[in-house]
Length: 334
Image 1 (cartoon, one colour):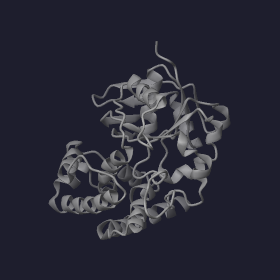
Image 2 (cartoon, rainbow, N blue to C red):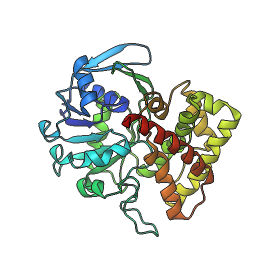
Image 3 (cartoon, helix red, strand yellow):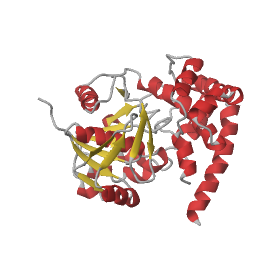
Image 4 (cartoon, one colour):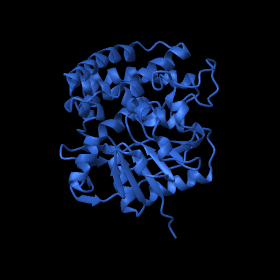
């Protein structure tokens, strides 16, 4: 008999909505937490609406949709689906959702703030400064409760609040120390019950790099050029540009013990096969929202400095994307 889980989704963007919808459909008790404007939009719709790759729309209603964390109660799982730059503001409210028996699943793009936790390396530093500048994540979220997860699906939030699921259903998970525990198996079953694939991985950091490999290169180039994944991967000059960024990132990753089970060419081919999909960063540009640069690029630069690796291509593209981001932030404050 399937056990009903209480699951809190923090951040109802494309990925959070996709997961919340799936968990609701599977019969779990789901709470959705986000900023007031997104909650208001979802409440106006009345549910979580997802359009699949065949154009079929499906709706699911969570138990609660709110911006008030104190209303939601304690959960078995808390899924952090916000962008990395929003996590410090969220962290101080996690105690409303989680007890010491709650598993916290992170699905941010790029490198997570906990990456250096328990990892043996020469620097002796336990957190990535740009992702947790004041230490609030380390202070409010116990890393022993964290389960790493990589989100491979491609999805887009439509202007009316519905989410279009473009392709993909994989959410591999793994413990930070490489072990397999009962909570790991339960988490995998949670994803599987919702129709997703969730393989348990003994080296979640390497899997994070595999996804970040493409995101740290293709996403900022898409933001700067307004091109889709397919176009960036097919155009010879941009294909070589992202391949160069991936080569630099691989050197950094390997300095921290990560391994890659695919070649750069295979990774680019896989991204190209997704088709004319707009990356999340390009969607942010079009919606005039701040870019997810810290987790995708600045964290790589910080790790490169710790490892003593030169990453000139990543650094140059980051400079251009950072200026674009500054202009987007300025528009929001006008």
